[in-house]
Length: 380
Image (cartoon, rainbow, N blue to C red; front, side):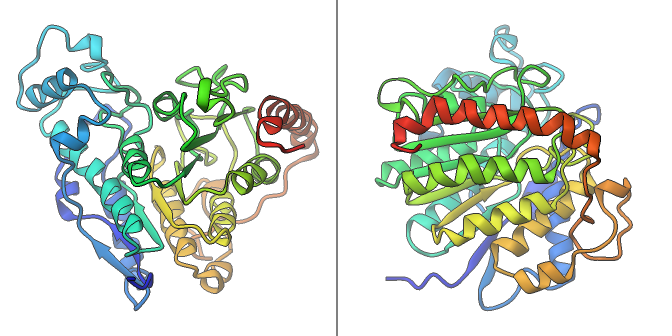
């Protein structure tokens, strides 16, 4: 049996050759910037970690989820051909434009998540992180929300095909609708999405009553969160909902989407989190002792996202002492990338008005989620 000693950061310079059009807020440079930041303070080297370059996902693997027709259209669009039914598949829109290299980038980013899943599957790594992943909106024949190929679904399918039960914890501010739909009738993959409510944010789904069907009843879990939620309330939701569900489900692998668009100041969302939330949650996930496949996701304030993902990597690697020593001033709550205390944002105590407005809503949501799914897992 291979000793699990090396945490794996998955990236290659090839991923940095592509870019969405300048009017699209999705910036693929984030992953390379995370790598350079980590490299600058030696967080990618050592006996317990290494970098691995991904291989593009093969066509047969892509067809496990996406349709042949859709993949054909993506490939043709990649080369400049625009078929008439492009718009029916969500292509050529403001959030999923057609651009040179879009298919090449999407299949390489998906391949990076598959690389991580396979390393975990074969016992070669306890933790993998692909900051170029997290395209959780894409459907079998639909591009949406900057997502063309659903790497999260493909990674879960790879693990499930080898009889690994997977818990997907989606921290992106947007509901992971594509992933939920893929496993809505299955119980070998549990999807748990913490996101801003669909009443106020794209894609307009992810309500508490979306709990799966048939064999999947109770294995789709949604926690729609109120505008303005802050660290303490968010962590309460995680501890009261996610922790007991995952503990009872007892997965073989945990996949985490570390979308950083819940950070205060993100231009596409309305939450008030600091990156301390991601650090605290990932510490909890590590404590379960399960293999972890982590992916990026959203995050449209680039500097804040880069720091959040660099912090996430250090926590995933178990650098608790370095991580705690780095807590200091700066970050999203000062609306500045000039900080003196390392990767963490400063802790901000919510105002009395914030607590008064948010806590009753959070209490209600927790109660609703528990009523909807806890009894299906023999939880009270």
